[in-house]
Amino acid sequence: MNKLLLGLCCLFLFSSAHAHELKPWKGGATPPLALKDLNGKSHKLEDYRGKAVMVQFWATWCPPCLKEMPAMQRLEKKMAGKHFAILAVNMGETEKDVREFASKMKINFTVLMDEEGKGVGDWKVFVAPSTFLLDPQGNVRYTLQGGAEWDEAEYVKTISELLPK
Amino acid sequence: MAKRGLSLAGVWLVLLMMWLGVACAAPPTSLTLATGTEVPLRTYPAQGDTLLLWFVCDEGHSANEARTARELALNSYETWFPEMLDAHFLPILPSSLEQLPPEEIKEIISHAVRLSGKKIVLITSGHGAIPILRGAKAWQDESSQQDKAALAGAVLFYPDLYSVVPAPGVEAQYHPIVVQTHLPLFIYQGQLSPGRWWLEHLKVQFARGGTKVQSKVLPKVRSHFYVRQDATAEENAMAEKLPELVQDALKTLEPLP
Image (cartoon, rainbow over all chains, first blue to last red):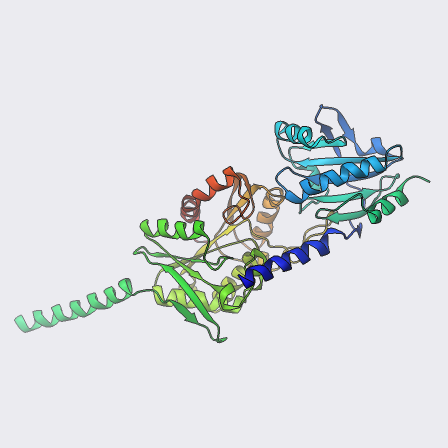
């Protein structure tokens, strides 16, 4: 039992340590992103030039993804009226599953469908969720692996600094 | 003539008893390694010619792994669970598997080959993949060409073979053991896992070392599906099929050239 508790503590500490760390992007040129949303509308990253963009890769089967969704909703509200957009890229699930989930969670931001995993491959996503923050010129500036409380001051400040001057 | 016949019968009797001694010897309950580590061993004996060395993350308490071993024993597959986390007082976590000393894995393989006389197949999951493959390679490096055939392969469930946790957007770095491995492998990967998208990429890396990997993506399950506390109905159903999955994998393991 003691070992189990120790293990759980380690897991908690490990998760906490990794939950809040925005890291500078080291992946070179911004990968391409051209996917359809749940209504079949095509979205290209180029369409979002002039805005700070959060590209988040997620799935309904991933508990940290689900945990951070409400925080993303709150972040979007905080950033309302500013040049900021969230593109939540679903990793390979069916439209039905994602639509049901989006409806249940009352998601307002754009959900893109990556059914063939092209985005996952191009953006080299190895962990769900993985998030990328882009500046208005379309350059990736930061990444974050794992879930986060995106409406916390630290993140809002970083994202605000990315907004067009 | 009668005397000669009796001697011949005696020789046959001795040989038969020796054979029975090997075939029916009870498996050990623990292994003492050169490092001084005493590894408790939970065994599920069977009469077949294959011994599965299964490195688990939970001291063998997982009902699914134990049930699988019992069912496999009915189909003549013997299973040994070396309780390595217990032996090293490691936390009962899947990530603890990465701390298993490859030298000890090598020694356990040696013991298993010597004590059982059977062909050995390694099984592990997640973070266990790197130390197990390193242990296998160390054992192969010290074995003669003829003896190497005793290690028939490995079955890896959702293996984690990255040398460091890959950063988003950056090419993943696999542990050097991936290209050094020369062993028949079967990989099971959950469909509900980012690893699913990188499975073919991983197989290409293994191919560089001459290892042909067979694989299957398991629908509607996440990694760790058979040990999860929060398992879904689909994951529980897949866990029920664990004996089948292991046997299917074993059938595909063929010796490499």
